[in-house]
Length: 372
Image (cartoon, rainbow, N blue to C red):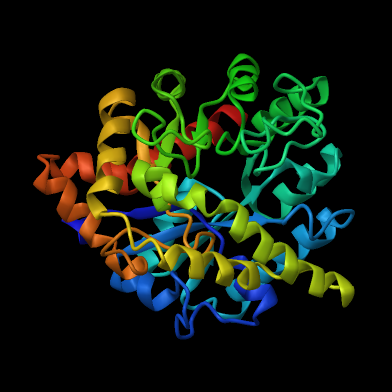
């Protein structure tokens, strides 16, 4: 069943490894969550690699870091073109699948990467970026994030600014998917009013089950579905298991102190702190909590399918961007366990194929067809 599907993951932060660690996608997984070998073992056919610029470490240099990460991905394709294919459309993903090559796609994570310049947005699109997550955990100059709504020192906009609306319109024109993971409810409401294309949430889970502001309410699940979009469920235990989330949040202050101390050491050297360094601290703290059960992840996939509809759910693992995964999922090699669990819950083969990648192919095609 799993082998018959085209499996597409909506979000992985692996590009940090290409640039900061000099790691090769075709090499040993070496402590990560995704590699070509594990993708093949797990039947993963295509991946949206997240181009994520940490906003505090790269302040004033967002575009520089964005371009470096894009180049890191493109260099992997150039080096390993016999086994990797850069995909710019849904049709390209199908072609890569037919050729037996792994489909490589890119999405910018965080609108701060465009530095308030639509020409940068167009440049990223020309380089191959096919979605943009409007915010990361930080509010930018034109869109509010869900990650800092309680911070009175941050200037919020009540959703999107006038320029933010221009960004959405330009993304629709380019055929670049609008990704609402991380955004505030007010931003999402404005996006819904402005976008003429289906909306995606590349790595968000269900708020009804796990009360994180990063997750989507049932109201928003239905609204995204009504517009023909898709919600791809995040694998991080803090977004899929309420007990684990509470324990994780209880560690927040201690965890942040440890990260800040290490960041200070890098500042003294005049260097940004790499993600794998801060993530190592997060991994230490996560290990104290154990792992959330796989059933928690399946519960979220099931909930989105029940509320939004079977045509509007997918997977957005957040591989290599999070400190741990649920029980039984150690890398991309374990993705068939998702299929097995869904079949055990009574999902048909056709439904599972939609969840694993079919729905994302449809939405990707719809967005690009509308632009054409």
